[in-house]
Length: 502
Image (cartoon, rainbow, N blue to C red; front, side, top):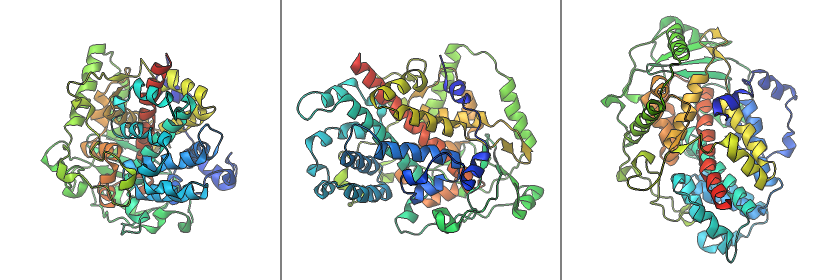
């Protein structure tokens, strides 16, 4: 059996050569064949190799061969984005819907669409917020009776819905919504740059690895300036960073921990505005910590691994409980696309008396089960998705501070597995004790909000969390949030389709 860490490792680490390839024209995709580069995909362009796979996948599911008609595809994108109140995506795909010959009456809302399309809304709602509630009976109701769906159509719809749910997370987590909706937004200082990101309980370490200029007219982030003047934790590091140029490294402390200073400012999301942080740590010390984790591969019993997962799961449920006052009312210009607006994320660990078990990857994995099922029912989409997941999982530039050839896989795996833990998915071979070693509490809170309540993130939150990271590093983290969430939704959806088929 393959586990993600082994399966995706076969792809190898993405090289900085990909950036040069896109600039020299040697990248293997034809931009003319892909979806127009909107502002969000320009931000994804911070990481060109992933950008390639993202655009290929989005272009295929929206414009390529597939069982769903174009008007259904674009309308599904609208209602998926509306679940997370993402006006930018809703407006964009309303326009595309009309351009593709869609019936303008459908834009009046859910009461004006065909019964067949309306029938899938419950699945949209469940996938967006509590995918573990999906059952094979939902699939059965769609595929039987009047206005029934074929299984291929259901799969295509599931792929579209999960794609735009997770893309909504990306739009909000990058703090783009206010800018894209014409509201005020802080400004990002740095141009796109290739970076590696590593975090521990005490710090975040990052490395800028390229200073290749990018046309400021071609990226929304170039219009923005961050209000994150940084204290000088380490005079030599600060001087190096302020000096800029050719891979200047930066070491940042994060000693917030789990104390009261980590309490959410806006009722849910903790920000870094309550610092200043007091204690720096060297790159060498961080590398030693990661080295210790790598070398101490003690064999844990199944019971111990399960216990560590449950501990992280319970800690996640305890992160700044959401209060009714913190909820954001659905905007009136989106409310006609939203039914049952009070149905929102509920912590998996607090599922109560419902007979819902942890989703174990050893029982149903993307590599062994999901990939072949989705590809069999919707030709070629499995390949596009798989390459995109691999690209996100392996994205690294192998640098840390001034040191090259550093393996950052432990940090990346901790983020990926933590995101899926939020959705009740356990990677059986993974020691979840590493999550608490490598992910600080404010980062966990940001990740949880980005996955579960992305509409609550503002540009202020984007600026305030991980304040020492360059823009491209924040984008890097947000890409992992987007793709791990996308895969989590698809795992639940495809498992129920498999159960219905058998």
